[in-house]
Image 1 (tube, rainbow over the protein chains, first blue to last red):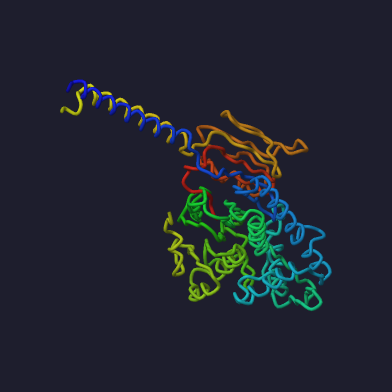
Image 2 (cartoon, one colour; image 1 turned 135 degrees about the horizontal axis):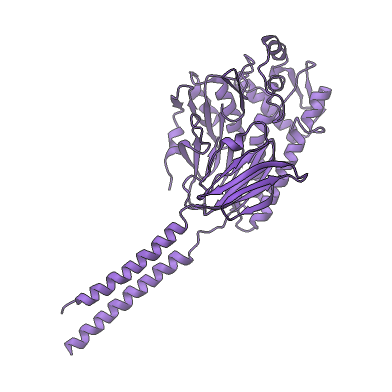
Length: 346
Length: 125
């Protein structure tokens, strides 16, 4: 009788162990993290856009389609390299009639130029062209000091006149040219995120516009996206100097390694200081985190120009940003709240 | 009452070994290894790479743009015709989370594989 009871207990143990095993294996083999992300990569705004999305109520492909069309619209409307864009018309004719959206963008560019003391300047295009950074196929060269001085005479955001009443933007000096590139990319990311949220409020994913990143909700609806900050001293493109974790908002980085050429052993990169006319040398990388990608985009450029030795760095947190600045010798400085984003949230 | 015999413990150990074996397979299967690449031209997929080798990429006018190499679970671009060669200097990429981008030629080489376990999701640069 006792022997039979012992056998029964052992049998129950075996059955329980096998049941646990089967359940565990089933969970491991058949469970898939939801939602499922779709991705599309396409060229726009002078860079490559990577849209990675998972819809909640709307198909991911439909949302990606919305994103692609919106980027194309912004590109055609504001790129100085598109013949009939508002910026091209402004640069050719000296004046252009704008709609509400363009008025907002021009006004934002002007305001941020004023806020940064001209470190971010939408009229820097004559210098960009002179160095050959206006297009991938332009000849890149070191201009003479005379050429730089001549181009500098056309660089000042105060040459832009915005007439809100008549919805017109004008240039106050012949030869001045505007380039909204350092603000339009971030604006486009923000706008696309807004559109996606209107259509599918619970969609999650990210938009990566050449390193300017906007987050559309947490990964798998619960995890932070892990974002590596490129190491400016590494030849490997995908080596991180630091890692941040975001569940929303955006981040942008300006670095001296993005677009550059080497002449007589000296590296000349594409972020031109509007005050000197030469590539800014005070920093090698600036990463800015903000609720808004447009703001991150603008301030990453401005803080790069202002450099590592910027006593007012903390002051810029008043504009809703946190920043990490890396000097040419490898030291780093950051605003007081930047470390918050280096902590893994979940 | 004696709880279990030697044979019972032996069978339980066998069961746990089997579970551990399947867990290991599942882990390594999703460990973020690159298992090929997709090549995009102007946003459209023009080539799916699944086997190791060197693949030449051409545009719509049959002009050579670059070679894409896939060996040992890593992808790189070589002999690109673009002026800046940024795609070439990107070097070998062994994580499926990061595409190789050639802006002048409008080509993106996207390593494929399970992205979920690949650590960094994306890079700001």
